[in-house]
Length: 396
Image (cartoon, rainbow, N blue to C red; front, side, top):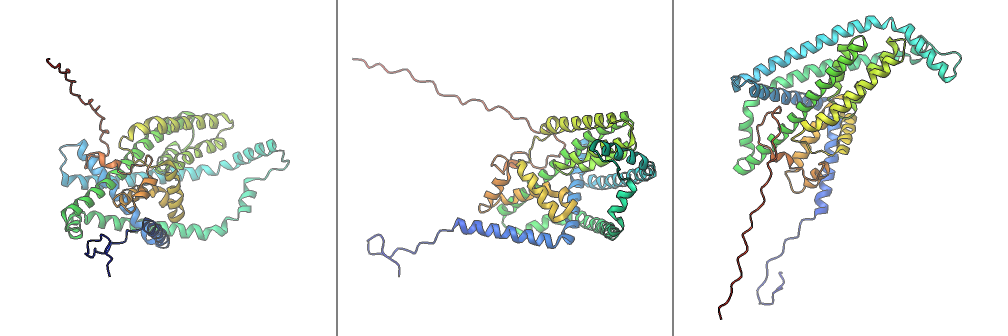
């Protein structure tokens, strides 16, 4: 029975209980934990699919860049041209790796005496009278027990590559039916437009990240190759290519990539100075590109907190391994955009963002290719205030 709260003799309608924000936030946290567990258990299935979607976004962004750079190229021809060029680049990269890896293995036989001499010098500095040799260290590692794991890893890599190509082919072939699926999922026009806007923001954010990482990675790789060629380091092209690939892993990828050439310079040269000079030059290139070029290119910033980038790198690397480290930032961008669409999960997107405004990607025009320069901020003219009227003088 309803209680008459107004005192006018009429029963007031029952009041609806307000939705508890604590319960809603707890439900979001439980859903995140359950989704993380499902992603971990289904890693073998989801990793090839995620990499295929990652490659599909790269090819789509490449097609839009081609249309922007080549205005005569039609929209229907841009995607096939991008696919063909991507395949050629892939096989070219595979040829570079195979060719340089062969020469690297051939030269590795000459590194034994140099490694023994390097170990002897380090042992003398540490006060060790009888330093171990490379052969003794190699036998202590007992590599035979790791052969099974290496064979399984190679087999998994081959099968994943096959599944990735199959997924990629189906994703590219089903692009035309995407709009019809959106219409079927969201019959309401406003909801449909919101979903399309969210998808465009995710696509533009990921494409912008990939474009910036590709251009800055090429800058670091070319500069590193010039430095290694001047020093005279063997297999400079191979090391430059590895540095370029490692640049797609945020924060730690570039740092790890530029440490390998100086280490091999210690083995190749008799003096320490080539390795020291190479390390200093590579660190300088990394610093200039990362602190001068990169901030200027990120005009349409992803607006992600640096701590979140590190946590995402550790999280996805733990769940999906090296593939997760490559996909950590794009996946976090996607999560931030999706969570910002709903009032109940927007607080999570606010925590993931750098300045508390996760809707920053809404400010740019949709459909802009990733290589387009960021829009310039036009100064807002000050508002004109009406001149104060002269005081009236009363006539007496």
